Amino acid sequence: MSTLPARPLPQPTTETAAYWAAAQEHQLVIQRCGSCGHCQFYPRAFCIECLSDGVEWIKASGRGRIYTYTVCRIAPSPAFESRLPYVVALIDLDEGVRMLTNILDADLERITIGARVRVCFESVSESCTLPQFTLLD
Image (cartoon, rainbow, N blue to C red; front, side, top):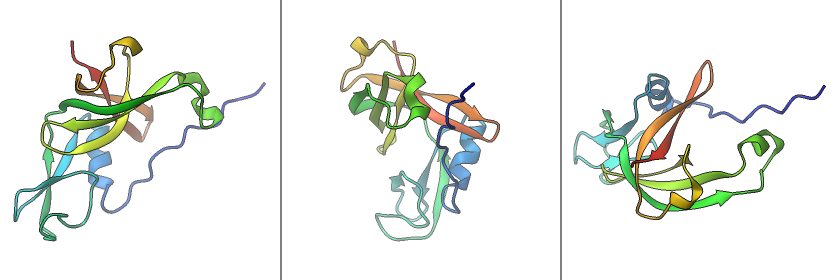
């Protein structure tokens, strides 16, 4: 009897630990600079706009638009074969940041650039929950 290889999971770092902890609680968070107000994603130790180290975590709305996407029909490894086809997308959150994610539970014909999406959460292990997105009706 064969078993599928494990899906690769994110490995939290000092900069990303708060992001992954929030995701585990089904909250989407991004960073905002306390000095200049700039919002950013992916997490960093400093503001990419003014270089201040005064970045803080804020709860994001979890809503945005598809900037671009692709439908993956060939698995990059055996761990992803059961997910085929799946959608990888860049999402422009309403807060002004862009993030790479997946679109879940959507008819592929309905996915279009500019479509509105909202965050949903996929628990992939006891210690890892992934922020993903689904189409808004």
